Length: 148
Length: 282
Image (cartoon, rainbow over the protein chains, first blue to last red):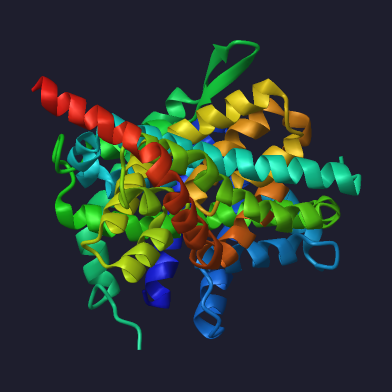
């Protein structure tokens, strides 16, 4: 995608976040605006970095790292970034993700129904296994290192 | 040079404006309904607007109400990445704000990546027991999101049983994963075996929407630790995004193949016996 396409799509996402934050949590547009601009700026920076740096990582990995850097203790704009982002409710950016994701798999319903109960059961075990496996190791290691 | 799907921005907007408008309508409906909490034993299962939007999205497609055409369905999967970026940025900010927690959990964050192999240990025996053959390797080698599907297709070829298994779990995960993950995480939290920090880390499985669903549930269940939980989830998700594919290729697949070789001759016949019985009955 061209930068301009990313930019316009991010603005549309920003409007979606503002709408969700207003409808779901009664936060007005102007109150949401700084937070949305911060999130979009970080997202855009992530895209730009992923295009410039030859190391092939998912765009979201770059976005996440830049978000961390913008809010870490040595960042000059730490306070502003954290306060602005705090106005955006946690689930507000997610509704649009759900809408797109739903549309993007809407041509798989028939394929899903054809899978049969065995595949669905295995799928449930696959998802559960990853989560439990990670939680168990994390819990044990944090107990050993005295973090918890 | 990058290859562009559309010749210009104008063309993209012309082709996709209906998707954006539909998404806005879904947001309007889904966030008006808001969260719904369903008591579940000693805890609760929480329905989030993202679930309603997802379901409305699925129903809008070419196989149900046909509001969306196949072309738009294809376009939407690219938009998911765009829309999830601001959310990932927010989680990244949380991680930066709670950097101390993230750093103090460093060893656990790195080691819990191996927990993703828990998928193989839990799901492979079941798959073999149910009578699956090589499909089981593709189905259970990882959580089977886009990049894993691409990996399996690359290693075994698109017509292989392994790729069929991987695709099946990919479809199942896409269809029920988001809602199931939130539900399962709530249940595990209620059981109280694991520290909320561990649950936060475990949420980062390398699939953004699953992580979102898990973290949304966890932050509702443990509001006092919401910041730390989302910070750890973000860190874990980022690490998974970077190492996930190598984990699957160099550890997941070999382990899967080995386990299949061990299990199939021993318990695979149960599945076969049942199949034979069924044939005889017919």
